[in-house]
Image (cartoon, rainbow, N blue to C red; front, side, top):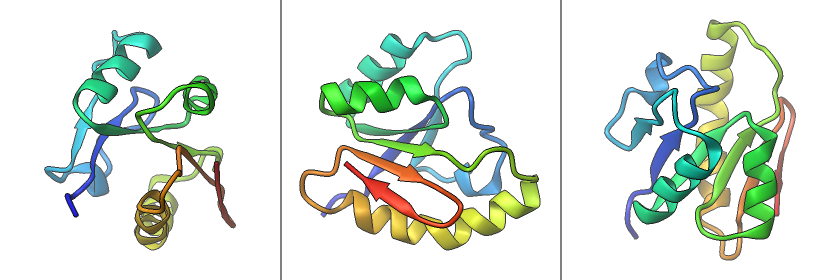
Length: 112
């Protein structure tokens, strides 16, 4: 199994310590959704976002997979704690066959 790689959409802060790993790269701020989607698909990256537009694309087209945070605004410290707890579950769900979209809520994960 290869280690998944991720592309952070511009609407997520790439400053979080969690994202400061080789498996993560940030999309440039000036790229539109189509360009981000194409880049992720061409480079086998999973898009991590808060943007509902990527959810709609994930339901219509594949690849890439999409992880969409539906957690609202959280303070950085709260988000870091949430992320460190939720990320292993997110990775496990992404590894399941046929999963195109993971919606991450404060209290649950939903997959499509």
